Image (cartoon, rainbow, N blue to C red; front, side, top):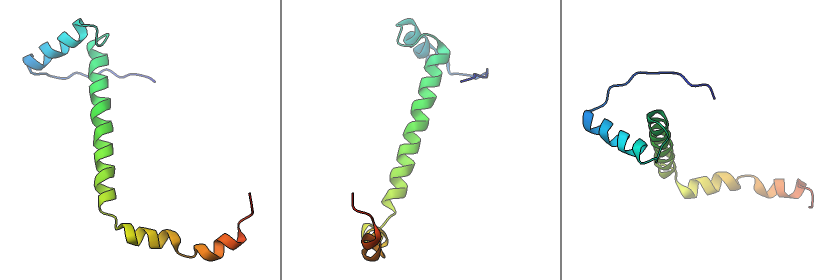
Length: 80
């Protein structure tokens, strides 16, 4: 995937921690470390959002919707 350069400002303490990660060979470069941090955060955010949306659903209502009209459909499905 193509990369784009950006400029960011970091707290000196945070930069020191980032450099420690890179120095301990946890990451090959600052860019890799920042990319992984962003990727992890965005992935976590997406999973939390999905969980929040799923929590809004009523399991009984969803089951009724899933079963609606299923009896007739089953008769027309081919045998496997």
